[in-house]
Image (cartoon, rainbow, N blue to C red; front, side, top):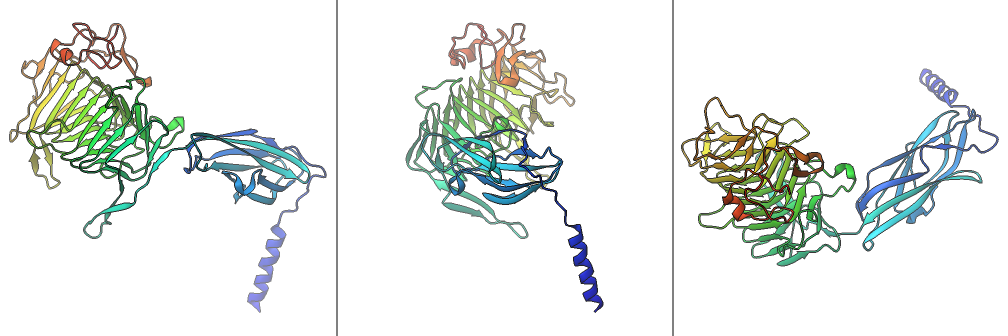
Length: 491
Protein backbone atom coordinates (compact mmCIF):
# COMPACT_ATOMS: atom_id res chain seq x y z
CA UNK A 1 0.00 0.00 0.00
CA UNK A 2 2.83 2.37 0.85
CA UNK A 3 4.40 1.75 -2.55
CA UNK A 4 1.10 2.54 -4.28
CA UNK A 5 0.74 5.80 -2.37
CA UNK A 6 4.31 6.80 -3.26
CA UNK A 7 3.65 6.07 -6.92
CA UNK A 8 0.47 8.19 -6.92
CA UNK A 9 2.35 11.07 -5.28
CA UNK A 10 5.09 10.86 -7.92
CA UNK A 11 2.57 10.84 -10.76
CA UNK A 12 0.73 13.83 -9.33
CA UNK A 13 4.04 15.67 -9.05
CA UNK A 14 4.77 15.02 -12.73
CA UNK A 15 1.34 16.31 -13.71
CA UNK A 16 1.86 19.38 -11.55
CA UNK A 17 5.19 20.08 -13.34
CA UNK A 18 3.65 20.17 -16.80
CA UNK A 19 3.87 23.67 -18.23
CA UNK A 20 0.65 25.63 -18.55
CA UNK A 21 0.95 27.28 -21.92
CA UNK A 22 -0.67 30.62 -22.75
CA UNK A 23 -0.90 30.41 -26.51
CA UNK A 24 -1.11 33.56 -28.57
CA UNK A 25 -4.64 34.35 -29.80
CA UNK A 26 -3.20 35.26 -33.21
CA UNK A 27 -0.22 33.85 -35.17
CA UNK A 28 3.13 35.34 -34.17
CA UNK A 29 5.75 36.27 -36.75
CA UNK A 30 8.86 34.43 -35.62
CA UNK A 31 12.25 36.04 -35.93
CA UNK A 32 14.62 33.91 -38.00
CA UNK A 33 18.41 34.09 -37.64
CA UNK A 34 18.52 33.73 -41.43
CA UNK A 35 15.91 33.30 -44.11
CA UNK A 36 18.17 31.27 -46.39
CA UNK A 37 20.43 28.39 -45.37
CA UNK A 38 23.33 27.78 -47.76
CA UNK A 39 24.94 24.39 -47.29
CA UNK A 40 28.48 23.83 -48.49
CA UNK A 41 29.18 22.18 -51.80
CA UNK A 42 29.14 18.40 -51.46
CA UNK A 43 29.52 15.34 -53.62
CA UNK A 44 26.37 13.55 -54.65
CA UNK A 45 25.54 10.76 -52.16
CA UNK A 46 27.94 12.23 -49.57
CA UNK A 47 26.43 13.99 -46.55
CA UNK A 48 27.08 17.66 -45.87
CA UNK A 49 28.10 19.50 -42.77
CA UNK A 50 25.29 20.68 -40.50
CA UNK A 51 23.99 24.23 -40.63
CA UNK A 52 21.66 25.83 -38.09
CA UNK A 53 18.94 28.46 -37.99
CA UNK A 54 17.37 29.91 -34.85
CA UNK A 55 13.63 30.56 -34.56
CA UNK A 56 12.82 33.18 -31.94
CA UNK A 57 9.41 33.83 -30.40
CA UNK A 58 9.47 37.58 -29.62
CA UNK A 59 6.01 37.71 -28.05
CA UNK A 60 4.75 37.42 -24.48
CA UNK A 61 2.69 34.40 -25.51
CA UNK A 62 3.67 30.83 -26.15
CA UNK A 63 3.57 29.77 -29.80
CA UNK A 64 2.47 26.39 -31.08
CA UNK A 65 3.88 25.47 -34.47
CA UNK A 66 1.18 23.28 -35.85
CA UNK A 67 3.51 21.87 -38.50
CA UNK A 68 7.21 22.07 -39.43
CA UNK A 69 8.07 20.26 -42.64
CA UNK A 70 10.01 20.22 -45.90
CA UNK A 71 8.25 21.58 -48.94
CA UNK A 72 9.28 18.64 -51.10
CA UNK A 73 8.49 16.11 -48.41
CA UNK A 74 10.01 12.66 -48.82
CA UNK A 75 11.55 13.67 -52.17
CA UNK A 76 13.68 16.37 -50.60
CA UNK A 77 17.47 15.81 -50.41
CA UNK A 78 17.47 17.83 -47.18
CA UNK A 79 16.80 16.69 -43.64
CA UNK A 80 16.30 18.63 -40.42
CA UNK A 81 16.00 18.38 -36.67
CA UNK A 82 13.90 20.93 -34.78
CA UNK A 83 14.21 21.26 -31.02
CA UNK A 84 15.69 17.76 -30.80
CA UNK A 85 13.02 16.13 -32.94
CA UNK A 86 14.00 14.72 -36.37
CA UNK A 87 11.90 15.61 -39.41
CA UNK A 88 10.82 15.46 -42.16
CA UNK A 89 7.37 16.37 -40.78
CA UNK A 90 6.67 17.53 -37.23
CA UNK A 91 3.52 18.65 -35.46
CA UNK A 92 2.90 20.75 -32.37
CA UNK A 93 6.35 22.16 -31.74
CA UNK A 94 6.08 24.71 -28.92
CA UNK A 95 8.26 27.80 -28.51
CA UNK A 96 7.65 29.39 -25.08
CA UNK A 97 7.20 33.12 -24.73
CA UNK A 98 10.42 35.05 -25.33
CA UNK A 99 12.25 31.80 -26.06
CA UNK A 100 13.70 30.15 -29.15
CA UNK A 101 14.51 26.80 -30.74
CA UNK A 102 17.29 25.67 -33.03
CA UNK A 103 16.71 23.93 -36.33
CA UNK A 104 19.63 21.94 -37.77
CA UNK A 105 19.74 21.22 -41.49
CA UNK A 106 21.83 18.76 -43.56
CA UNK A 107 21.68 17.36 -47.06
CA UNK A 108 22.70 14.31 -49.04
CA UNK A 109 22.19 15.05 -52.71
CA UNK A 110 21.25 12.17 -55.01
CA UNK A 111 23.28 11.24 -58.07
CA UNK A 112 22.81 13.45 -61.10
CA UNK A 113 24.87 14.72 -63.97
CA UNK A 114 27.63 17.26 -63.45
CA UNK A 115 26.93 20.20 -61.16
CA UNK A 116 23.53 20.18 -59.46
CA UNK A 117 21.77 22.95 -57.55
CA UNK A 118 19.31 21.60 -54.98
CA UNK A 119 16.69 23.81 -53.39
CA UNK A 120 13.81 23.35 -51.00
CA UNK A 121 12.00 25.23 -48.24
CA UNK A 122 11.57 24.49 -44.57
CA UNK A 123 7.96 25.47 -43.87
CA UNK A 124 7.00 26.66 -40.39
CA UNK A 125 3.23 26.86 -39.92
CA UNK A 126 0.84 28.20 -37.31
CA UNK A 127 -2.45 27.06 -38.75
CA UNK A 128 -2.88 28.93 -42.01
CA UNK A 129 -0.01 31.34 -41.23
CA UNK A 130 3.21 30.16 -42.87
CA UNK A 131 6.82 31.27 -42.78
CA UNK A 132 9.56 29.65 -44.81
CA UNK A 133 13.33 29.22 -44.79
CA UNK A 134 14.98 28.70 -48.16
CA UNK A 135 17.43 25.77 -48.33
CA UNK A 136 20.16 25.75 -50.98
CA UNK A 137 22.95 23.26 -51.68
CA UNK A 138 25.31 22.68 -54.58
CA UNK A 139 26.38 19.13 -55.35
CA UNK A 140 28.93 17.70 -57.74
CA UNK A 141 28.40 14.39 -59.38
CA UNK A 142 31.54 12.27 -59.39
CA UNK A 143 33.17 9.00 -60.32
CA UNK A 144 33.17 6.95 -57.12
CA UNK A 145 35.75 4.24 -56.45
CA UNK A 146 34.51 1.97 -53.66
CA UNK A 147 36.43 -0.96 -52.13
CA UNK A 148 35.22 -4.46 -52.88
CA UNK A 149 37.94 -6.42 -51.07
CA UNK A 150 39.66 -6.27 -47.68
CA UNK A 151 43.27 -7.12 -46.91
CA UNK A 152 43.60 -8.43 -43.36
CA UNK A 153 46.92 -8.12 -41.56
CA UNK A 154 46.94 -10.41 -38.55
CA UNK A 155 48.02 -8.91 -35.24
CA UNK A 156 48.98 -10.70 -32.01
CA UNK A 157 46.58 -10.69 -29.11
CA UNK A 158 45.20 -8.47 -27.67
CA UNK A 159 45.51 -6.19 -30.70
CA UNK A 160 42.82 -6.08 -33.36
CA UNK A 161 43.73 -7.17 -36.88
CA UNK A 162 44.51 -4.41 -39.35
CA UNK A 163 42.06 -4.08 -42.22
CA UNK A 164 42.80 -2.37 -45.53
CA UNK A 165 39.76 -2.08 -47.82
CA UNK A 166 40.67 -1.75 -51.48
CA UNK A 167 39.60 -1.99 -55.11
CA UNK A 168 41.86 -3.04 -57.99
CA UNK A 169 41.69 -0.60 -60.90
CA UNK A 170 41.65 -1.52 -64.58
CA UNK A 171 44.82 -2.36 -66.45
CA UNK A 172 44.96 0.95 -68.36
CA UNK A 173 42.69 3.26 -66.40
CA UNK A 174 42.41 6.98 -67.10
CA UNK A 175 40.93 9.43 -64.61
CA UNK A 176 39.88 12.38 -66.73
CA UNK A 177 38.78 15.87 -65.76
CA UNK A 178 35.13 15.42 -66.81
CA UNK A 179 33.97 14.83 -63.22
CA UNK A 180 35.80 14.58 -59.89
CA UNK A 181 36.95 11.18 -58.69
CA UNK A 182 36.18 10.16 -55.10
CA UNK A 183 38.13 7.29 -53.53
CA UNK A 184 37.03 5.18 -50.57
CA UNK A 185 39.61 2.79 -49.17
CA UNK A 186 42.64 2.20 -51.39
CA UNK A 187 42.53 2.31 -55.18
CA UNK A 188 45.18 -0.20 -56.27
CA UNK A 189 47.24 0.11 -59.45
CA UNK A 190 48.10 -3.56 -59.97
CA UNK A 191 51.26 -5.12 -61.38
CA UNK A 192 51.54 -4.37 -65.09
CA UNK A 193 48.78 -1.74 -64.87
CA UNK A 194 48.93 2.02 -65.35
CA UNK A 195 46.72 4.70 -63.81
CA UNK A 196 46.84 7.97 -65.73
CA UNK A 197 45.44 11.08 -64.01
CA UNK A 198 44.77 13.69 -66.66
CA UNK A 199 45.74 17.34 -66.57
CA UNK A 200 43.33 19.34 -64.43
CA UNK A 201 41.63 16.28 -62.94
CA UNK A 202 40.39 16.43 -59.34
CA UNK A 203 40.81 13.39 -57.10
CA UNK A 204 39.26 13.40 -53.63
CA UNK A 205 40.08 10.86 -50.93
CA UNK A 206 37.76 9.95 -48.10
CA UNK A 207 39.22 9.69 -44.60
CA UNK A 208 41.59 6.71 -44.39
CA UNK A 209 41.84 6.37 -48.17
CA UNK A 210 44.63 6.59 -50.71
CA UNK A 211 46.34 5.22 -53.83
CA UNK A 212 48.43 2.05 -53.74
CA UNK A 213 50.78 1.58 -56.68
CA UNK A 214 51.67 -2.09 -56.37
CA UNK A 215 54.93 -3.65 -57.51
CA UNK A 216 55.05 -3.48 -61.29
CA UNK A 217 52.38 -0.77 -61.44
CA UNK A 218 52.74 2.77 -62.76
CA UNK A 219 51.11 6.06 -61.75
CA UNK A 220 51.26 8.92 -64.25
CA UNK A 221 49.90 12.40 -63.50
CA UNK A 222 49.64 14.66 -66.56
CA UNK A 223 52.14 12.63 -68.63
CA UNK A 224 51.55 14.83 -71.69
CA UNK A 225 52.46 17.95 -69.68
CA UNK A 226 49.37 19.83 -70.84
CA UNK A 227 48.56 21.24 -67.40
CA UNK A 228 50.56 23.78 -65.45
CA UNK A 229 51.74 24.75 -61.98
CA UNK A 230 48.82 27.19 -61.68
CA UNK A 231 46.25 24.89 -63.32
CA UNK A 232 47.18 21.57 -61.72
CA UNK A 233 45.59 18.21 -61.20
CA UNK A 234 44.46 18.28 -57.56
CA UNK A 235 44.62 15.35 -55.15
CA UNK A 236 43.06 16.14 -51.77
CA UNK A 237 40.43 15.16 -49.20
CA UNK A 238 36.72 14.91 -49.94
CA UNK A 239 35.48 17.75 -47.73
CA UNK A 240 34.67 20.57 -50.12
CA UNK A 241 34.02 23.33 -47.61
CA UNK A 242 36.65 26.10 -48.01
CA UNK A 243 37.58 25.73 -44.34
CA UNK A 244 38.99 22.25 -45.01
CA UNK A 245 41.03 23.08 -48.10
CA UNK A 246 44.37 23.32 -46.33
CA UNK A 247 43.64 21.43 -43.10
CA UNK A 248 46.14 18.57 -42.74
CA UNK A 249 45.30 14.97 -41.90
CA UNK A 250 42.10 14.44 -43.91
CA UNK A 251 43.11 11.34 -45.91
CA UNK A 252 45.70 8.61 -46.01
CA UNK A 253 45.42 5.20 -44.38
CA UNK A 254 47.80 2.56 -43.04
CA UNK A 255 49.96 2.75 -46.17
CA UNK A 256 50.01 6.52 -46.34
CA UNK A 257 48.39 8.68 -48.99
CA UNK A 258 50.05 7.60 -52.24
CA UNK A 259 52.05 4.43 -51.57
CA UNK A 260 54.64 3.52 -54.23
CA UNK A 261 55.56 -0.05 -53.44
CA UNK A 262 58.91 -1.62 -54.26
CA UNK A 263 59.06 -2.22 -57.99
CA UNK A 264 56.40 0.42 -58.75
CA UNK A 265 56.91 3.83 -60.36
CA UNK A 266 55.22 7.24 -60.23
CA UNK A 267 55.82 10.29 -62.42
CA UNK A 268 53.84 13.30 -61.21
CA UNK A 269 53.69 16.55 -63.16
CA UNK A 270 51.65 19.73 -62.68
CA UNK A 271 49.85 18.54 -59.55
CA UNK A 272 48.81 19.89 -56.18
CA UNK A 273 48.70 17.14 -53.56
CA UNK A 274 47.44 18.38 -50.20
CA UNK A 275 45.79 18.02 -46.79
CA UNK A 276 46.51 14.39 -45.91
CA UNK A 277 48.48 12.51 -43.26
CA UNK A 278 51.45 11.07 -45.19
CA UNK A 279 51.68 12.31 -48.76
CA UNK A 280 53.98 10.37 -51.09
CA UNK A 281 55.45 7.23 -49.53
CA UNK A 282 58.17 5.46 -51.49
CA UNK A 283 59.24 1.90 -50.82
CA UNK A 284 62.78 0.70 -51.51
CA UNK A 285 64.46 0.46 -54.92
CA UNK A 286 66.71 -2.41 -55.93
CA UNK A 287 70.19 -1.73 -57.26
CA UNK A 288 70.18 -0.45 -60.83
CA UNK A 289 66.47 0.41 -60.93
CA UNK A 290 65.38 3.88 -62.13
CA UNK A 291 63.71 6.51 -59.96
CA UNK A 292 60.53 5.20 -58.39
CA UNK A 293 59.23 8.76 -57.83
CA UNK A 294 59.68 11.81 -60.04
CA UNK A 295 57.82 15.04 -59.23
CA UNK A 296 57.93 18.06 -61.53
CA UNK A 297 56.26 21.51 -61.30
CA UNK A 298 54.04 20.49 -58.41
CA UNK A 299 52.99 21.45 -54.90
CA UNK A 300 52.83 19.02 -51.99
CA UNK A 301 51.41 20.85 -48.99
CA UNK A 302 49.70 20.54 -45.62
CA UNK A 303 50.40 17.03 -44.35
CA UNK A 304 50.09 16.12 -40.70
CA UNK A 305 53.15 13.83 -40.84
CA UNK A 306 55.44 13.95 -43.88
CA UNK A 307 54.82 15.24 -47.39
CA UNK A 308 57.45 12.98 -49.03
CA UNK A 309 58.67 9.88 -47.21
CA UNK A 310 61.26 7.61 -48.79
CA UNK A 311 62.49 4.36 -47.29
CA UNK A 312 65.51 3.54 -49.46
CA UNK A 313 63.68 4.88 -52.49
CA UNK A 314 65.03 6.85 -55.40
CA UNK A 315 63.34 10.24 -55.57
CA UNK A 316 63.76 13.20 -57.90
CA UNK A 317 62.02 16.55 -57.32
CA UNK A 318 62.14 19.43 -59.81
CA UNK A 319 60.57 22.89 -59.72
CA UNK A 320 58.32 21.87 -56.85
CA UNK A 321 57.07 23.41 -53.61
CA UNK A 322 56.85 21.18 -50.54
CA UNK A 323 55.43 22.98 -47.53
CA UNK A 324 53.70 22.87 -44.16
CA UNK A 325 54.13 19.38 -42.73
CA UNK A 326 53.67 18.33 -39.12
CA UNK A 327 56.94 16.37 -39.10
CA UNK A 328 59.01 16.53 -42.28
CA UNK A 329 58.53 18.05 -45.70
CA UNK A 330 60.96 15.43 -46.96
CA UNK A 331 62.18 12.42 -44.99
CA UNK A 332 64.60 9.99 -46.55
CA UNK A 333 65.98 6.88 -44.89
CA UNK A 334 68.81 5.75 -47.11
CA UNK A 335 68.44 5.54 -50.86
CA UNK A 336 68.76 8.52 -53.18
CA UNK A 337 67.26 12.01 -53.20
CA UNK A 338 67.77 14.64 -55.88
CA UNK A 339 66.09 18.04 -55.58
CA UNK A 340 66.75 20.76 -58.16
CA UNK A 341 65.20 24.22 -57.89
CA UNK A 342 62.67 23.34 -55.20
CA UNK A 343 61.21 25.32 -52.34
CA UNK A 344 60.93 23.55 -48.98
CA UNK A 345 59.08 25.84 -46.57
CA UNK A 346 57.58 24.66 -43.31
CA UNK A 347 55.22 26.91 -41.40
CA UNK A 348 52.98 24.12 -40.10
CA UNK A 349 50.41 25.71 -37.76
CA UNK A 350 50.76 23.11 -35.01
CA UNK A 351 53.65 22.28 -32.70
CA UNK A 352 56.66 20.92 -34.57
CA UNK A 353 60.12 19.87 -33.36
CA UNK A 354 61.42 18.21 -36.53
CA UNK A 355 63.18 19.92 -39.46
CA UNK A 356 61.84 20.48 -42.94
CA UNK A 357 64.32 18.01 -44.47
CA UNK A 358 65.48 14.89 -42.61
CA UNK A 359 68.40 12.84 -43.93
CA UNK A 360 69.00 9.47 -42.24
CA UNK A 361 70.92 6.28 -42.74
CA UNK A 362 69.64 4.53 -39.61
CA UNK A 363 66.48 3.88 -37.64
CA UNK A 364 65.60 2.37 -34.27
CA UNK A 365 63.87 -0.98 -34.77
CA UNK A 366 61.86 -0.49 -31.59
CA UNK A 367 64.18 -2.49 -29.36
CA UNK A 368 66.81 0.22 -29.00
CA UNK A 369 68.90 -1.30 -31.79
CA UNK A 370 69.80 0.73 -34.86
CA UNK A 371 69.28 -0.68 -38.34
CA UNK A 372 71.15 0.91 -41.22
CA UNK A 373 70.26 1.82 -44.81
CA UNK A 374 72.94 3.51 -46.91
CA UNK A 375 72.18 7.07 -47.96
CA UNK A 376 73.75 6.79 -51.38
CA UNK A 377 72.91 10.31 -52.53
CA UNK A 378 71.15 13.41 -51.25
CA UNK A 379 71.79 16.31 -53.61
CA UNK A 380 69.85 19.50 -52.87
CA UNK A 381 70.73 22.05 -55.52
CA UNK A 382 69.51 25.64 -56.03
CA UNK A 383 66.78 25.14 -53.44
CA UNK A 384 65.29 27.07 -50.55
CA UNK A 385 65.00 25.32 -47.19
CA UNK A 386 63.09 27.56 -44.80
CA UNK A 387 60.65 27.34 -41.92
CA UNK A 388 59.79 28.17 -38.35
CA UNK A 389 62.47 26.00 -36.70
CA UNK A 390 65.93 27.25 -35.78
CA UNK A 391 67.41 24.63 -38.08
CA UNK A 392 65.46 23.13 -40.97
CA UNK A 393 67.81 20.31 -41.99
CA UNK A 394 68.26 17.30 -39.73
CA UNK A 395 70.90 14.55 -39.90
CA UNK A 396 70.74 11.13 -38.32
CA UNK A 397 73.54 8.77 -39.21
CA UNK A 398 76.19 6.32 -38.11
CA UNK A 399 79.42 5.13 -39.71
CA UNK A 400 78.02 1.65 -40.33
CA UNK A 401 76.51 2.76 -43.66
CA UNK A 402 77.16 5.37 -46.34
CA UNK A 403 75.89 8.89 -45.70
CA UNK A 404 76.40 11.02 -48.79
CA UNK A 405 74.82 14.44 -49.14
CA UNK A 406 75.56 17.81 -50.68
CA UNK A 407 73.82 21.19 -50.65
CA UNK A 408 74.79 23.75 -53.26
CA UNK A 409 73.51 27.09 -54.56
CA UNK A 410 70.80 27.04 -51.89
CA UNK A 411 69.37 29.27 -49.19
CA UNK A 412 69.26 27.14 -46.04
CA UNK A 413 68.05 27.76 -42.52
CA UNK A 414 70.59 25.77 -40.55
CA UNK A 415 72.50 25.91 -37.27
CA UNK A 416 75.98 26.63 -38.58
CA UNK A 417 77.75 25.52 -35.39
CA UNK A 418 76.11 22.29 -34.18
CA UNK A 419 77.16 20.64 -30.96
CA UNK A 420 78.20 17.91 -31.36
CA UNK A 421 79.71 18.82 -34.73
CA UNK A 422 77.79 16.34 -36.86
CA UNK A 423 78.32 18.48 -39.99
CA UNK A 424 80.61 21.29 -41.07
CA UNK A 425 79.21 24.05 -43.29
CA UNK A 426 82.75 24.91 -44.44
CA UNK A 427 83.26 21.44 -45.90
CA UNK A 428 83.24 21.96 -49.71
CA UNK A 429 82.27 18.32 -50.24
CA UNK A 430 79.02 18.94 -48.35
CA UNK A 431 78.16 22.60 -48.90
CA UNK A 432 78.95 24.75 -51.91
CA UNK A 433 77.80 28.29 -52.66
CA UNK A 434 75.08 28.24 -50.01
CA UNK A 435 73.62 31.14 -48.04
CA UNK A 436 72.64 30.43 -44.46
CA UNK A 437 69.92 31.87 -42.25
CA UNK A 438 69.01 34.87 -44.37
CA UNK A 439 65.39 35.86 -45.10
CA UNK A 440 63.72 34.15 -48.04
CA UNK A 441 61.06 36.90 -48.31
CA UNK A 442 58.27 35.04 -50.08
CA UNK A 443 55.54 37.11 -51.68
CA UNK A 444 52.78 35.43 -49.64
CA UNK A 445 53.57 32.04 -48.14
CA UNK A 446 50.15 32.01 -46.46
CA UNK A 447 48.57 32.07 -49.92
CA UNK A 448 51.09 29.53 -51.32
CA UNK A 449 52.77 32.21 -53.40
CA UNK A 450 56.46 31.41 -53.08
CA UNK A 451 57.75 33.96 -55.54
CA UNK A 452 60.55 36.02 -54.06
CA UNK A 453 60.38 39.66 -53.09
CA UNK A 454 63.10 42.08 -53.95
CA UNK A 455 65.76 41.84 -51.26
CA UNK A 456 65.40 38.08 -50.85
CA UNK A 457 68.69 36.36 -50.08
CA UNK A 458 67.73 33.61 -52.57
CA UNK A 459 67.90 35.93 -55.59
CA UNK A 460 70.65 35.07 -58.06
CA UNK A 461 72.47 32.49 -55.93
CA UNK A 462 71.76 29.42 -58.10
CA UNK A 463 74.70 27.53 -59.57
CA UNK A 464 74.75 26.57 -63.27
CA UNK A 465 74.74 22.78 -62.78
CA UNK A 466 71.17 22.51 -61.51
CA UNK A 467 69.91 25.33 -63.72
CA UNK A 468 71.15 23.51 -66.81
CA UNK A 469 69.08 20.51 -65.73
CA UNK A 470 65.99 22.64 -65.03
CA UNK A 471 66.32 25.69 -67.33
CA UNK A 472 62.64 26.69 -67.06
CA UNK A 473 60.97 27.49 -63.72
CA UNK A 474 57.70 26.12 -62.34
CA UNK A 475 55.69 28.82 -64.11
CA UNK A 476 57.33 28.23 -67.48
CA UNK A 477 59.76 31.16 -67.36
CA UNK A 478 63.28 30.73 -68.73
CA UNK A 479 65.88 30.99 -66.00
CA UNK A 480 68.74 33.48 -66.36
CA UNK A 481 72.29 32.78 -65.27
CA UNK A 482 72.71 33.01 -62.36
CA UNK A 483 69.20 31.88 -61.48
CA UNK A 484 67.31 32.32 -58.25
CA UNK A 485 67.13 29.48 -55.76
CA UNK A 486 63.73 27.88 -55.39
CA UNK A 487 60.95 26.73 -57.70
CA UNK A 488 59.86 30.12 -59.03
CA UNK A 489 62.07 32.66 -60.73
CA UNK A 490 61.63 36.38 -59.95
CA UNK A 491 61.49 38.27 -63.22
